[in-house]
Image 1 (cartoon, rainbow, N blue to C red):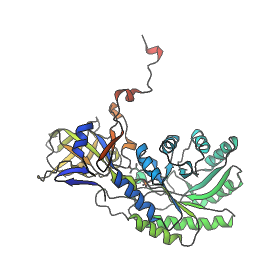
Image 2 (cartoon, rainbow, N blue to C red):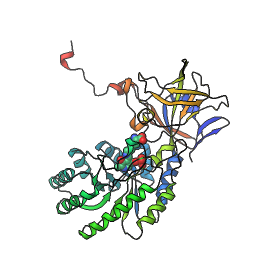
Image 3 (cartoon, rainbow, N blue to C red):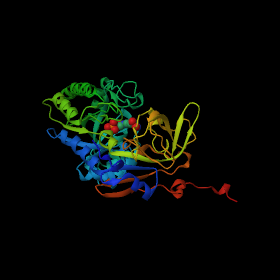
Length: 419
Ligand code: LLP
């Protein structure tokens, strides 16, 4: 359920007409519904109410400060993977002791900043990282609380690019090797090993892989108890899928119920790192038709948003529903919705039944809240789009459209090229 609905054939975000915003600020822009984000967060978080838990929003899915701020106000934490995400999370007001740091390639610099910021926990992904973290912690007289990220080798049945928990993936440490890593961690003086973490993939539409993973982690937990390692935190990562088209992912309540049943009697705090399930269907991308053209094979609608604004269709062949901002009720035609970028792969939708859009028409690309803006680039020297949040009757630009100055910020013509 979200708050992008038609009122008398006009698409609204909560109580604001989408066309009105487009007229005020131009296109393309990402548009988020405050009440949808808030409700998704609450539904997810409340589903785990019977368990000690911490919901850490996965910043990579959408890192806008206003969005992170909303989670901060709701009591959420953050799952970060870089110093940049740490900076954003702290700037948005997410408490330092609710921030967990994942990532297979953490730099020493980022780890040091995170330690100095006194974050909650590091999800360590290799022995080398563990040793470096211990050394940095010693150098700056801190202690790092850690979980070891496990690669449970469970098939999540999702797009191969977003599978992370198979032994052929680069993520985490295989269960069979992890006991050695735990033993190593136990002996290090500047890390405090308190957790097990994992993340098996994204856009999962079945509960079973999560349960299989949890069972494996519980077995590991028992081994660790035997080794005298006291695990207080179990981090299951993110990954719960959403409906883009006709997928039927489990509701967070079902997901939480299955996890609770599998956890049984164990006493630990569960950490969750949801991204897409919270923000995916709380945001859309609004674009305007520039031109239309037909070849002997195809009808094309050329819009002012491209793969630099939303790369998911190009990169993963992802489906995003396409809706008119003004409902037409006309005949539908098979069409490709394409962007202005000089790449054949620059499409937002392919072979899709659409009304006969005309130049100037506004189009909504649905389910674009997660991995939309956060994966946007300046390719073709295009200015990254604005982001807007609506709350009831209010709308606010939460990120200004970029300017040409933003585009060249930091670029320098060296002296040897001056004359
Ligand atoms: N935790 C970790 C360690 C992760 O790597 C990820 C996502 C998450 C949590 C959040 O997963 P979510 O709940 O959003 O599924 N760009 C791709 C998705 C990549 C996901 C990467 N990791 C896409 O657009 O589909």
